[in-house]
Image (cartoon, rainbow, N blue to C red; front, side, top):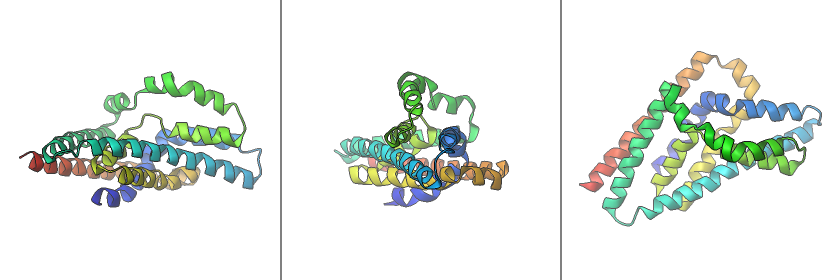
Length: 220
């Protein structure tokens, strides 16, 4: 239950910095395509795009939750799993703070260029509502340190249902920063965004240490 309660504030704070930098370009690009449409149609297209992105996260949560469930066979096995996922979360938190090569390695653009870039470009050339929905879904599959963080939390839940809930809440929590991108970018200065990123990354690392401790106790 604790991992579910931690999702919303952590995801929202991280979205104010990392999501704007990571997905802001996609939002600007599809917003430009919507300039010729009525406000009602533009809203519908944006809504479908973002809901499809959240749906992609929910699918990832389902997979992660099931994968985590497989490790709940014995308490000792689960302990090892929690310990190593905790190490991964600490690593992610550190990468979010330091940025640079570590985060670049995690957010590998080779995955993007090999599997996602071509279908993304093909869909971006189309103007249908279905194409926009598919673009949003692909956006949810882009390699991202922030997504990895919550996938790890979904795995730790050891439950398919909790995994879906965690990743869905994560997606919903990122909606405000992406739907109101231009306003937030102008209203929040870079110092504030960096502070939010730092605080959130520390929370991620603390959660990772907590998971490591719980895993260590289970192994003993």
